[in-house]
Image (cartoon, rainbow, N blue to C red):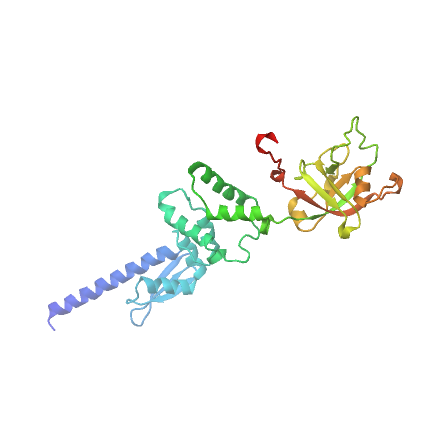
Length: 308
């Protein structure tokens, strides 16, 4: 081989070696997040040993970027994951991905495709939204999304299969709209505490509830379980001076879980609940009962044509 050919081969090898070292230095700059890195030449096959903080792996000249990245991930997956996540590349099993998805601006034009894709995964109940348990732990904030279906219908006339399905269940009172009964501890109020200046014998009885109860102003039925007493049908009122259950108030979630609401009745309504009329001194202070509430929008007055 001529001297010119030998010189050309040496230059070519030198250029390749230099390019390889540049790639390695670029990788180290990408994967080093703490500590001091070093690159040392091995003695066999032109292999380089790359050390960066806690990451240590061997590189060969023929390794491409995929090989280099794979070795770095194998050597220290947690460290590499942190670095890649800073450039919006995430491990599918990492909670960093969840945080990044939560920060997506759904209104931004560049995010429309991924936003629509994620929503379709939810609607199809696929991936992390598979049943059971899709809505377990959800709270009342989802109601706003459901209410938006009504707003869209009113403003644009665009219909929703979900809205139609919910309305059908509400009409049939099935599923989440089924009639429910709850437990209650009903207290007898003394005659003095409920004395009114004027009474209407035709008025339905008052059912006293805890201040701030969701049942205020609604129609309620109360009865003794197993048919052991009578039935009281009245309207729920809030009168703190006559009945205040203090810290024993229960919210709807607690009632759905089986805890007892605290209610109160005057002597006449309490006697009707027990199914017997007795002197006030002979009545118990309280009794366990069950109750149901009539939805406010189901109170209907039927008007016939012509006012008949």
